[in-house]
Length: 257
Image (cartoon, rainbow, N blue to C red; front, side):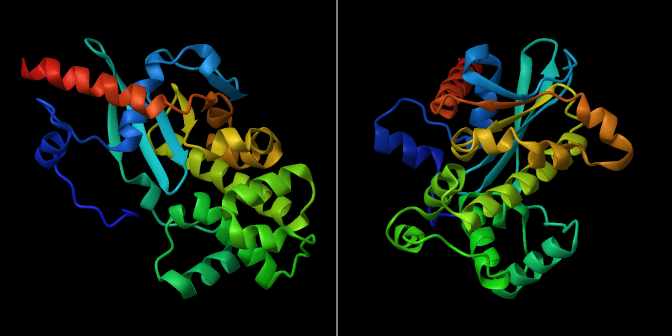
């Protein structure tokens, strides 16, 4: 969605010189990996009480926002499914978020959740805070933003406590991430747990472990108690998607033989 690429399985196979070639959604690949990762490859944000046969939701903020889910099957264990849940509409929860929605709407028209819960989304939140709320910035941060990857700079400066604007952007981002993860937990009835993938969650794990993420995750009215029991984990293995793609390829190759 975020790259002007047009690819198909046959051209991929020919380019690689492979006997078989398969295309798979990146989050579906990540979901394929989840049952195969050892416990030490996860960080726990909320322990919860996973139902052994419950659906598992997988959400990953990175360049965009990916969403997939795993459904338990008696014969094959978990079956991973892709989705485009990252492109659902963003629904503001308070006046500040309504202002943020209007600010983004003036730039893009429709505002999806991905416009906020992603690397570019973190930078957008930062710019909103600086432009509309005039939150001050520490010397040198602006220069770093102009020559380095903005989301990484914001994550580093905010967590180090050197930048008030970056710190507040991370807090808002964590709250929006938690609200989105909670919505998906309800949409998929993910009583088996919610897993956060992608590169952002491990990089800001201390921020996600603070109050805003879980407060927003659980803040679902009459379903607050249910969400309080849903395990939430972060994948720490940056090769998880490749592991999942390998399992997907093995399964697909086996089904053709």
